[in-house]
Every structure is written in structure tokens, then in C-alpha cells.
Image (cartoon, rainbow, N blue to C red):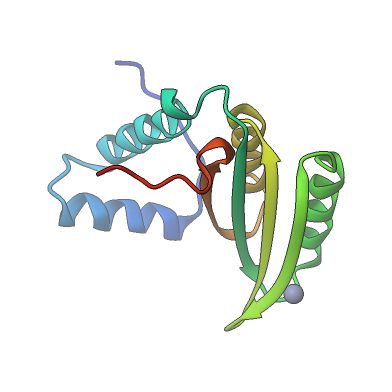
Length: 140
Ligand SMILES: [Zn+2]
């Protein structure tokens, strides 16, 4: 298979190698391939296609990193029609930005991807709730 060269921070490479060793992957390449497959599958969820969703996206970054704050503000404005609310708080030494979106899967996945690509963001997590299922009991 083709070989590609990818730039990434040294600490991320170290974590890839640690994870590969701990979980018996053949090496960092296999971890990266598996990561890519998981990422591709993440938003290819037929169950959520074409449904209106509430998306809660949380973003952690180092306290007071102005470049991140500026970019997140810009993203909030770019998605004004879909951002229902935001909250900014502080946990430990981090700023926590919480976005509540009301949109379909395509819009929310694009938003999450844009937030993930912001330089110096530490973690991005999200949860999705189909709005047509709100209040219905889950059959198990
Ligand atoms: Zn803050």
C-alpha cells in the first residue's frame, strides 16, 4: 500500500506508539489506519440521517488561549442559524466551551470537524439527540 508522510506533534506520536504497544497493534501505522476508519464511520450513521438533531459539542482548551477563543467565536457566528446556545466555563486549568446546535447530521458533523481542526484545542466531544425521539420511551 502507498506510504504517506504525516506531520504531528511529538507527544501524539509517543501516545500512538504507547497505544500500539499496549494493544498489540503492529505499529503506529496500524493505529492511524484504525483511527481513520473509526473517524469515517463516526458520522456515517443511517439511523441519524435526515433527522433533525440536537447536538451538544464540548471543547476544552488551555485557559485563556485567545487564538482558540477567536476561532470559536468565528465558528459560532458562521453557524449562527444552527447554534441554539453556548456556554463558557472553567474546569481545572482549561476553558470549556459548550455549543448546543439544532441541525441535521451533515451540518453538525461539519461543525465538529471544523472545531477539531482548530489549533491548540485539547479535546472535542459531542452527543447527538434526534429531536423526533424526545420524550419517547426507549424499547430495550
Ligand atoms: Zn475561559
